[in-house]
Image (cartoon, rainbow, N blue to C red; front, side):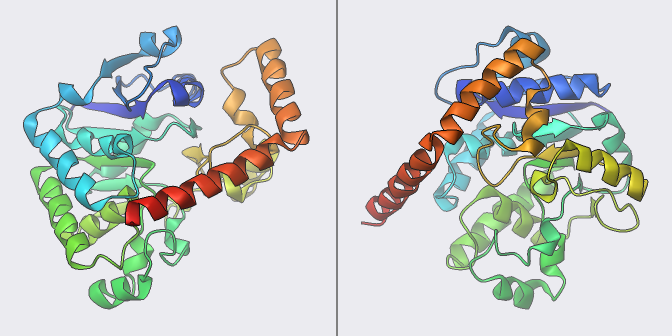
Length: 305
């Protein structure tokens, strides 16, 4: 059984990617890591380049490129590089982990493959408690189409463990067709399409955050700081696979985001925190957020016109 980890990154995400790889290795995981270039400026970190096999979209076979091209026609809210997570289904590995960069590994990810026995996909998140509001404009339609419990199988696409098969690729294509037939129902991003593929294909999945496993939530927003993570692990006597800083780009200005500096020595960490503090306390970050919000709004208007 061949296994490995897929990441997608570029120079913009280099800092979080480096910290992710550092956390993977420090957790004892020795699996090979392949990093697909997201696009834009390339990674130049010597640490990253020494740990990964660097791949490009062009490195993959024609059938993989065809899937990405087809996905692009329906996932219009996704930058092209986000779709490269689907390239893992065309690797020569039997099983793989795909991980976003804004993640910190908290256990040896090699152990996660133990749960794949008899399954198609394993994940550890609490997306199932959101009632589909982040994946669908009309979640009630999904319930009507796939059953009352359909939204409880939701997946956070930023961290998945996959036993790949041609059938799963076929299911992804079927999900693309479903998106075309029901354009007003799903949000046009990769996570909702992956969920629809799992529903259409009746994938066998395990969510480690659900009973009987009851692993802790992997979303950083559920914790105030790193101390609270440690205390919850002790109190619940359970496990946690990773922390995912999803929802927005982590700036490092929140207490829970201390784990993003794990790869830095004391001096470098203090220098980064000083810079982050100045930007945050001066109000610069708030101004930038307003600017980006307006920019996204205008871009959406232009795309529709």
